[in-house]
Length: 84
Image (cartoon, rainbow, N blue to C red):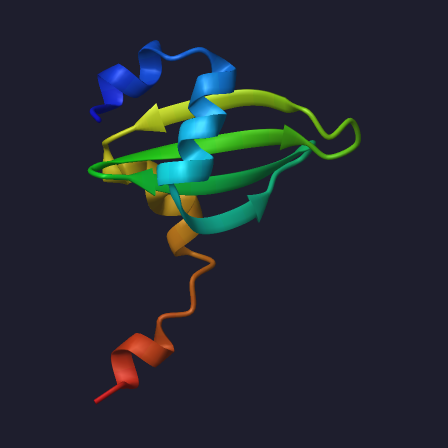
């Protein structure tokens, strides 16, 4: 599946595809939303879920790794760096 094909799916199909094919990479909290980062093949998907109403308010899919910056700051890579 390509990012374009994923983007063409409706929201229910996108979420179903994430459940079956996506790999959860990271999570973070925004001001009003909890954001989960997934990967499918060579693209990434952010799912924004409202903290109080527990509904998906936005799904963002992308291939540009610059958008991973908010997640990289929170990741502990010591285990990777010091593993020998």
